[in-house]
Image (cartoon, rainbow, N blue to C red; front, side, top):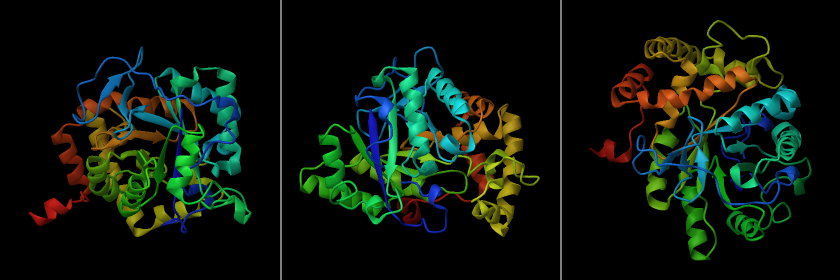
Length: 363
């Protein structure tokens, strides 16, 4: 099963090309096989969001939710390939991570045509082909917009994928190249417009928005997207739960060798950490580390579980460069039941940035 996600250029100019999240029908993932629409799950799971159907995977601690209000079942956690696959890590490590993720119940794998100039898609496709897992047992998401260097290889023009976005994605689905489509880094107004166009012309609307979400990036996922979920069924697939590693605490005492901030092309991340806001965030991260210690988990697990507790979030995408990081991140599933109102309120107090909905502002 494949989901295509379209992305806009809004707020992307401040970052490098590989940090511009975007999606498309997966031409590089040749090894992944034909598209099928079933993600596996078992018995119902009663904790968590009452409005989202949930289940526990066979022989793992992984849990599953519907992607928005579609029928597609995705794991709480997904494995991302940005920065890592085809670039930061070897193909052998990429295969190890994919295997561990799959064996621990992850059925969602995210990539994009721009990641490592297309090498991330190729690497993931080769791994899936080699593994020979049932094609119906996992979901692939990929993104378009930042493709090649030529004008005909970028954007969402008719030459690149067909005409305008909704018609293009409807075409992709009708041709069997994908089963669902969503958006990435779109505003709530743009998503509503896409939905309206789909309804007006009997086309297929988006089922999800892929959005950045972590302690220091909250408004869109906590205020705007829940309203869209209830109105039109669009779910959230979130990325960067650790704010490019900042929330893990690895940068509290400087920039370690081999970390993302030490890599070429990530001067923007170094500048961000050294800014006044970045230094304030590092202080809060140390306080959150103390809370995590008290709860018996790591700061990383607490941050991911905190993301999962948010209304309308279907899946959180992980970005890891080694097996130890992946196994630690998977432990967030065990921390999620501890995210009660008291714990969430304590985190809100530490952060001091809880956004307020329009309804709360009026009252």
